[in-house]
Structures are given as structure tokens and as C-alpha cells.
Image (cartoon, rainbow, N blue to C red; front, side, top):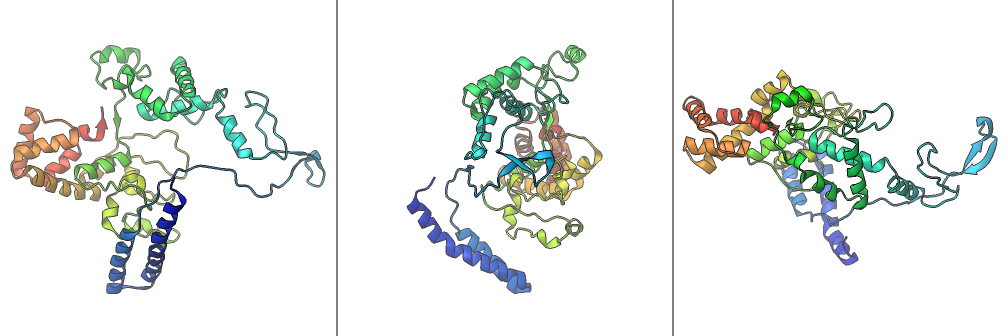
Length: 389
């Protein structure tokens, strides 16, 4: 994205700082006490001086060395080499006859073109179904990882075909697909239907989408929402993964506990959950309670369970209580000492609306006996905060 001169200028500014950072990190491993604190502050300052990354676009290209020749082995014996062959597509999957030579160039490009060929009946449907799944919580095909004989049949096959065709016509542009879905009347309908009883008798599972599916926030969304309402969310974009503090007993379960080096800058701990370091053998407790997937296996569809540990985490957990304290301070800062204004602001921040008269009266009665921090914690536990309608 950047020209050669811009790259050279950036490198000239960044290289000495990068060397300084590397040297400081090495020294930090060997020091303790006051000297370690001094070096930590120096490291923070060096990272602040580091110029931001240049604009870039991620892409893939064929960079290959000499490929090992592949031969048909007669009777499967390595010493009896037959005709030389090259990579090709499974004939059972190919929608049309494709000939690839043994010495062809750029085989990965050929694979990518085959996968994204407009005549390929599968790729567009799989992508469209996955996007629909993320918007509605369930795909038109309920098994997003399995479109084969063992997978579920589509609930709306004509709709799936229509979306796939439009997706291909638009040049497989995801933005156009998102726009088509989110501007539809199906997506824009309420999660509350006036004819709930009659609709549930005919379609209890809501496969016909007679109302928008109500869903609970994912683990990452819950954490980010808590931080945002408390005015603590760090919106910095890009950079290294963030390692947040967790219980020592969990870290000790790692093969090498030194792998879990907490990010020194505490402000970084409040960054969006997408930047948190994820290790397969150490799941963050807060995320695990709210059904964050196990990284050991593929997760085509997240489960949404409801159990007592979630309530305990939101009422007694370190994350929720620490951020409730910050939320209370924000209410005092932005609404002053007036309880009525604090209640109105709290509802606007957590539910996106003003409280009803009954809710306001109940909240004011609560604040007569309990501190503002307890009220902030109670607001975090509202269904209206944790669920998307």
C-alpha cells in the first residue's frame, strides 16, 4: 500500500526503537525489584515511540521451490514408479472436467480459482449460509460445517439458492451480501410477535423466522459491553496480542508457566476481547463461563447455555465487580450526585432507553439503602443488557 520511500522512512524510524525494545525485554528477564520497575517504564515509553504500522493488505501468492515429483506407484510399491502425475481435484467433487499437468505452475492459484468458480455449486452456498448464521444465530442449513449427506437439509432452499446466486453476481462481495440481509424485513423485525401463541403452535422452533431470534451476547461481547458501559474500553486497533492476568493456579497448569507473560501496560488489559491472547490449553475463566469455544476443536456453531455459574460470575466475579466500581464512578462523574439522573443515565448506557416510571421508582428505593456500586452491578445483570432483542 505504501510506496518505497514511505517504507524506507518508516523502517529508518522503527528499526532503532525495535532494537531498543528487544534489548529492554532481554534485560527485564534478568532483573528484579526496583530495577525491573524502571526497565518496565522504559519499555512502555519505547513502545509508545514506535511508529504505527503502515497500511497493508493481506494476500496469498505462490512462492514455491522445487516440487518433489509425484508418480503413480505400481501396486503401491515406492520402488515401482509409474507415470508422473500432478495435483488435481477429486473427480467426485469437480463440477466440470479440469486437466492439470504434472509440471503446471501455481497449483494453489488453480485450486483457488476452482473453489471460487461461479459454476461451483457449493462455495457460494456455504459462505452465504455462514453469513446468515452469524446474523440470525442459526443458518439456513443448521450444520454450517457439513453440507453433505450427513448434514441438515436447508430450511429455505429457494432462499439459499437466491442468496448464493446474488452473491456470485455481485462478484462474491461480502459487503453487498450483508447489505441485502440487514435491509430485509426479516432481519428488521422485532423479537416480540403479537401472535406468539398461534405462531408457536405452528412453528415452535422459529424456523420460519416469524420473529427475530432473541440471543444472549457472546462471551467476548459481554466483556466488551461491560468495559464500554464503565467507560474503560480501550479502542486502540492493531498491535500485539494482550495477555491479561488470570489466577496463578491456572497459569501453573501450563507446561511452561513463563509462557503466560502478562502485558505490563494495564491500559492494554481493557482492549477489545478480539485482541486477548488465546491459548488452546488455557481458557480464560470469564469466557469459559459464557460458552466461549474450546480452542482444541472446530466450533461451527456456538452453544448458548444458561446455568448458575453465569449468575455467580456476574454477581460475585472479579471482572463484573471491578467494572461495576468503574461504572458507578462514571455515573457520579457524568450525572452528579442526583440519584434520578444517575438512574436515567444507567438505563441509557445499559439498555439504550430511559427507565419506565416503575423501574425508576424501584431504582431510587434501592439507592436509598445501597451504594451506587451495587446499583451499577444490578444494571449489569439485567436481561436487557445481556440479551439482544
